[in-house]
Image (tube, rainbow, N blue to C red; front, side, top):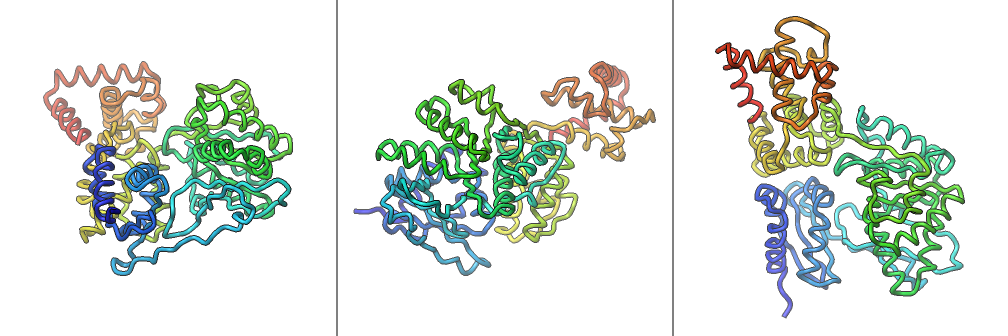
Length: 475
């Protein structure tokens, strides 16, 4: 007897909860979901808003897919139903059969539906001899250059990426290799380049594919004896984007076929864009010939955004969604969430969701309550910028004065305290702390720390300041 949709979803929730290991995130993003139906191995779940859908797709799609397939079977699929105005959910939409099927190739159709999506890996092969046909680029229209906030952390990468989009395959930036830590925007930039190139050259074939998808496609091709079809398909692409190539590690067969795809495209003047969490030289368990090809073009990194850029990112997202929010709350988020752009946007969405569910106006008090939970759940490391803001606010001084050459007593005193707490409460080197505190050298930071320690032990009023500031920074 087949399980009902509620039983299936409850079983899934148990697994998800164990995997998350975070009570706050679980209650925020999974408890509000309601199962609607289970038909033909398709589980339909209702989520309370577009924000919810976007966040789940961004952060938890792999966990959802793995859990649902474990509960229902390998052919299980997932559909969303999004509540509109808290009353009427969007209807579930079933994708139509793709025309590729008539070629009898092993096809799993890429789905491009706004509010209902079935999760599966696309495998859009065609048979030899078939003329070039329209291919779903799999690009996300929302990840454009217009929505990519520029700052010191990404200016070089954005400028080079824009140059690639203007003249794909014709610059020396081929391949264009983007690397960074998790959640800093490399996937966004890759999509933006693809979208811009499509706009500039409508007749060119652009394809975005994750490395995981590429591996699954190649594995299926080997099983079905269609390796040549796989190669021919990828040789048709004018601009190929492969995301998270580090997933190819230890997969010698996949690396071999990628090597041939790379050579074919590159020699034909076609563009390759690769993203990774490491530089080409740092990719372990890769064949040397593949690493050598990845080094041919330009490698650029995306760094952690500074507080100014983080504020601009939040303002951009709020403007795009037509939401107004007091500046002090935006500033509070920007100073407190500094680990990645993804977590910054996640914190914003979490705050908006909590406000919506509880029918509360977004105030600085609500922001502190909700975001502090979010921060503690994600084990935040205090940033130098946050320390600077707390210290300068404490003495009613503009925080930008820390970068000035002023020798006024109150400015020097606040700068020294910011250096002291940055050394004590962060993992940054003395050189980095000095560069962020008025472009000072490491010896100046050491002198500041000694000065603060001496005054702490000899001046009662100063000791009160230090103790008070440490409590404020910790909270």
